[in-house]
Each structure stands twice: as C-alpha cells, then as structure tokens.
Length: 338
Image (tube, rainbow, N blue to C red):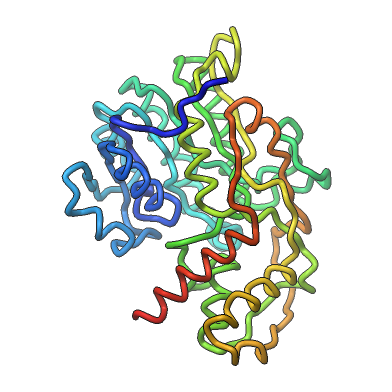
C-alpha cells in the first residue's frame, strides 16, 4: 500500500510547539518545506527549544494560552493540519494540582478542537497518553480495552479522546489520537520535580549524583524514542481516511505509539551507565537510591502497536538501544557546552 510518509508544502499548527515533542515536530516540519505555526504560552515549553527557528521565514510564533479561545481561533486560521501537543504533563503534577491540569488539558483541548472544526482543518491529530489504560493489568495494551484512570492527568487524556470522537460524529472533523508511551529524547527537560526519568537520570549521572528510583526498579515501561513519534504524527495526518475507517461516516481513531517492548527502570539505568561511561568513566561507581513508589504509577506498561502498523504504516525504527545511545549523545553534548 503506497502511503505518503512526510508532510510537505503545508501549513501546520503545532500547539505546545516550544515543548519537548512540539519543538521536535517544528524542526522536522520546517526541514520538509512547510509553514509552521507554533502556539505556546511557555508555562512548560522553553524559548531555547525554538530559538533557532525564529529566524526561519516559514516559522511563526504565537505566544498564547490554549485556555483562551480567541488565541486558538487565531492560531488555526488557514491551517491544513493541527498537531496538538499542548498540555500539562506529569501524573504527580496532576495529583498535586488537579484544577490546572483539567483547565489546560480539557478546557484548552476543547478550545483547540472547536477552533479547528470552525476553521475546517483537514485533520486534528492530538497527543493522548498510555495513562488512559489505568488499572488494566492486561499486557500488551490494546486500544479497545482500557481500565480505570488512576490520576487527574489520565482522566484528562481520556476525556480528550471522548471529546474528539464526539466532535467527529457531530461536526465531521477528522481526529486521530496518539497514545504516547514514555517518550524520551532530545530537548526533554531533565530538571525539576516532574522531570521524565531518562533525562533526569542522565543529568544525575553527569553531576555525579545518585539517581532516585521510585520503588525497587522492577516497574517496566515501553520507552519510545522521540523520532518514532515524529513519524507517527505525520502518518496520522496524512493516511487517507478510507484506509483507516473504510466507509465509516466519521474518522475518530486512537493509536498506541510505542516500540512494543518492555524495559524495567533498573534495565534503563544499566543502559544509561553503559552509554554515559563512554563520556565519564567515574560514573560507574555511582549507585542509585531506591525510594517509595509514586501515587498513580502503574507497575507495567507495554503497547501493542499492531493497529498503528496496519492502518497507518507505523514502523518504529528506533529501538531502546539506538534511542538511549542517541539521547545520551545529545544530552552529553549539551551539558558539556553549557
């Protein structure tokens, strides 16, 4: 089946475009001869992520909050595709502050969705999350079977999927949700209380500090290198509707985006030791600290990606070994040059 793999010569809005995944999308899309609009309020995104794009003639920055509908309406004007990445991430953050998580991830999402529908965008692709599987113990995770969400963040992402389906049925807007599984890679923030595991561990090792593992390190995840996510977003935007849903009247699908593997936290740390020792041999003597399990964390998460492979042509080329090597090289270069 012939598929168009890359978005070219289009106008694309990336909400949350100064964030980790969003800034990677902006870079890829600019390199493929698109006009890119970045919408971000810099609450969790960083200007340094997009500084190099500001001089690009095809790049437009709109500084604004998705909780403001007029800002959303301005951002989607004359846009072909929306890649909606803007959100407040982190399960612990949502447990500490459920109100703000809900305002941004639910109200802000509906603003973006409604504005996109009004502007008649070709397709609305949005970031969902593996957290929607909640307390389901089934492995690997299948899109059609989810459990009870275990955090306000998970509830917000599940509500996004429900709203997207509802808008597709009522208004005809084409929507695709991508359930990301533990994405990591360049530009992911290693600092702060809500930092993701892999960049946080790399920074700790660089500073010769002990990485802190929540629990005994046996929890496992389907760690997914960010370049796989770049591929998935473009396929989700471009795959013809009939190849996904046949003769069904509306398009509102969700797909697992991962590698289909399972790696424990202890195994991740050992891989990081192996890579980081290449740059600093003293790291070998640094031992982790084991702490308490975090509230809202599920023990194990692994994706079945067969649906995305079959319907979108998704082919995650970057496995855990390649991804960790590339991530360590990028972070080490960045840290050494600071």
